[in-house]
Image 1: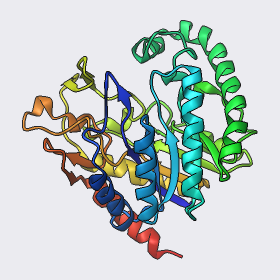
Image 2: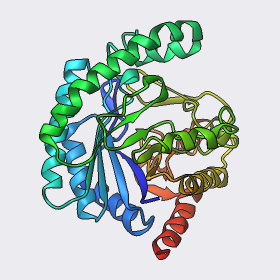
Image 3: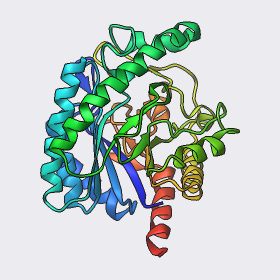
Image 4: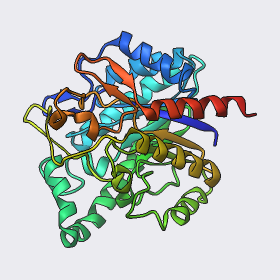
Amino acid sequence: MRVFGMNYDTGFVSAGSTTHEPFDPETVRRDMRVIRDELHCDAVRITGGIQDRLELAARIAADAGLEVWYCPFTNGLDRAELLAFVLDGAERAERIRRGGVSVVYLTGSEIAMFTDGFLPGRDLTERMALFTDPMRMREVVPAAQAAVRDFLAEAVPAVRERFGGPVGYASIPLEAVDWAPFDVIASDAGYRDATNAADFPRSLAAAVSQGKPYAATEFGCCTYRGAADVAGAGEPVTYDEHGRAARLTAVLERDEEGQARYLIDLLHDYEAGGVEAAFVYTFANRHLPTTGDPERDFDLAARGIVRVLPDGSWTPKAAFRALAQYGRKRARTP
């Protein structure tokens, strides 16, 4: 496996706020040094829906010696707005690349779910509801797949006019992406859980045998007991009208060791399976801080490898320590 990577969220935009508040460049700078020097990652996937933050974090990551996977992750845009965002990002990523930095550009993330007009629904909440109605989902998926293919067929040539490095796209299975125009096949569905564990080796083998480098751009699990069995499911937390965590939807027991085992096991699977790059999800879920109230300890529902404290600082979890050991060992191995 060429790349051991980490996801880094600069702010997913929702309900008038983002999942990374406040966004402080000095904090980002410290985090990137930790990702490189303590976790021994090779690369970082920079995600978010605010372009200036993406570019700034990408430059900071490059300064820290990390390969940059520049990845717009937008929410609530329409197709025209998404295209403009993706092309603007390509120009910014190219400026970084021309400075001698290794940069991979991903032309969006999971756009069928998060962009208006690909799947039915006025917003993400309505589109997520489709998953509870399998018959309706089967009806609407073909049109969504066609819309995704049409968008990427327009976007990728325009991205290549602006960006000279490798190009990919962070996909989900329902999109059925045509990978012909891309240099890298990438999937945000790198989760192994009870629903797919038996078939996981076969599906991974199929993914890496398509003739192009394959990247698992997102995989991880939450920090409660049993989370590995539902790793690909949503977080057991509700949000208020301002996008802040409101309450846990279940009684949860902390299990940091379970999260750590899950991540290391999957990294070993990816190594053995011939994956090009694997990106742990995620460094920090800043919108899910820990609290002194067990019923509001939102870190239990977080996939972050650090525990975000109420003041915005963080402390390492067991997963952080396990990944640091993995990274050190990997760095010493020729």
